[in-house]
Image (cartoon, rainbow, N blue to C red; front, side, top):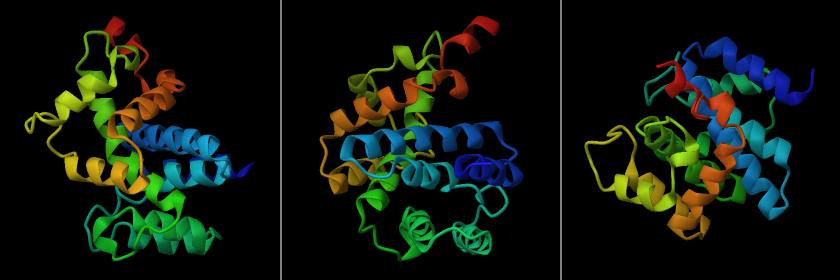
Length: 192
């Protein structure tokens, strides 16, 4: 088994929720796309995206997530670089986001969830129907996807040094590449 397959097994061992698994895949896709864009290690960045919330279902409280996950990752032989990046995505962890990988994870995490929510309210339930300006507009609607922290999306893009609308469009495109795996290729609307 390669590293990606081992990481996927770890994710499904700890995460039963289909939506949380899909969130991990969406963040992984965004991380891989950014790694390609900046010439970084796509496997490493993808791994961080895939595993960033693997412990969340079992340990959803701020005093446990992502701390317990970090301990588990250490026991399973994951590097300090991976563990630190995952720790840094939690605002409350006290771990500053320093590396481009850490900043990218934070910038993509909440946004991937928000883009998913935007796709799910479209008639075709498809990422093909989602555009950056409409995502930006939906961000102003506080009742829509209220659990998504808009400030994290704004701060993440700013910290990454990218224009917000370009960042949104980039992540939409990254997620479109795996729309079928995310259930956001329009097939959900056809079966509804």
